[in-house]
Amino acid sequence: MDATRSGALVIACGALAHEIAALRRLNGWDALDVQCLPPELHNYPDKIPGRVREAIEAARNRYAKIFVAYADCGTGGRLDALLEPLGIERLPGAHCYQFYATAQRFSELAEQEPGTFYLTDFLVRHFERLVAQTLGIDRHPELIAEYFRNYKRVVYLVQDEAQSDVAYARSIAVRLGLEFEVYTVGYGELATSLTRVAEERLAWPR
Image (cartoon, rainbow, N blue to C red; front, top):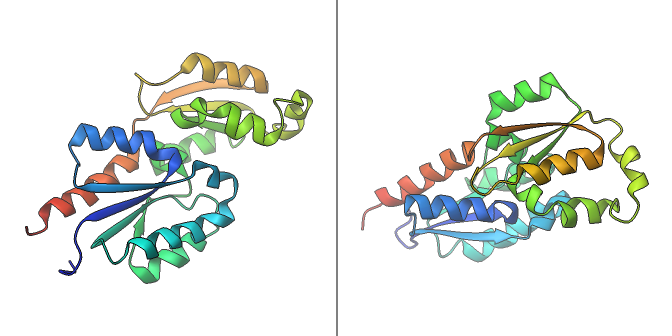
């Protein structure tokens, strides 16, 4: 640890804000600072590395440990190209569906039916704004058949059963004309990764 800096920072996708807050509360990770970037960046993955770089540069002189709570998220390896030379870790996998479900389980789901549209608790809460409005299917429902013609089912990966909305997720599947399945997966590798970062922070000398 660099003695001139202290503390640990998680630079996170805003789509994980609710889940990270729940984990911090549950585990008492008060010493773990979190900075969330706008969740809308998921619609513009080419902008993610640049925004993450800005956040890192602004924080590097203040924190001994920085962890990036993004998967690759459609950056095509550009996020890794930024982080690896800096020695900064990120969440495992290609996207949040994979690290929530864990790599093995997601692989099984994808192999079972490649034409799957995945939902998380966050996407269910914000489906209208981030999916329906962005794609224009709220105004032009006739576009659904074109956008989703290669999909067969909707799979809802539930993080927190108490906060989930299975009924609304099912209504999304009906709206898209797809079959519906739901699996409770919890926080998956998000919890594993943040636990490691928090435990490393607690192990630092005071």
